[in-house]
Length: 277
Image 1 (cartoon, one colour):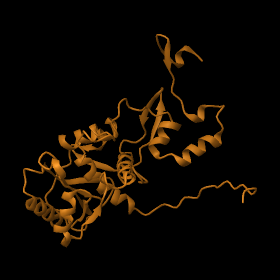
Image 2: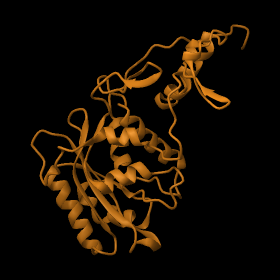
Image 3: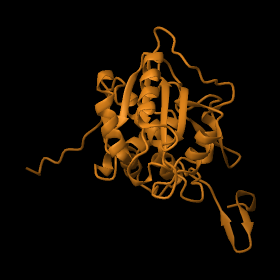
Image 4: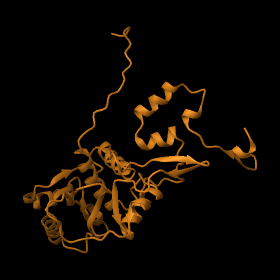
């Protein structure tokens, strides 16, 4: 190895590379990793993607890429477009300090965009008025409605807003933690392009550094609002002591939309051992 191939700092050096560059690693082993890893793990493990220091779940680059400073919130939807409104209600003993979040996502075409957003402390707005705000938003956009009904606030909302045929999503601590993990993973992968054929993030190594191959990538666009950006950038999986109302409202909406995307059928080779019954 030439000295120009690495940087030295004292007794240490760093060198970037891909698993495919390792001539001693069987190709079949790499293919197995590709088969079982999600897109994010695949980039980190196989292509040696830089892993940001700390335990922030989404990472700075993904959120900054999603911010569209020209995106303006609107109060009414347009005919022929597809919208979903997600409501995460303040509840439990912390209702006075917790936030209620109501956001509407336009998923007519890629990338999807947040077009309406409301956030306030649960104790600042009477409960009947919160339900009224949700109803007005749903009618203004002609949208579907999805609610976290695992907490007390959500269960009551589900009953009072029954005439809107809300979709119930139960991800709270008393429910399956797997569902919450799936929702968060779907949102994270969406920031990298999700299941899109055109908006997937693609990177390559140029002069030893990762560079973006596309100028436009990512399946989500968010307005330049501090509350949304800050909560997404600071979110951690251990979220007992961090704000997560916006994150979960957005995750619910994205999980619903992406699960209903037509699935792509892919052929996959299967190894068969005829000696095993």
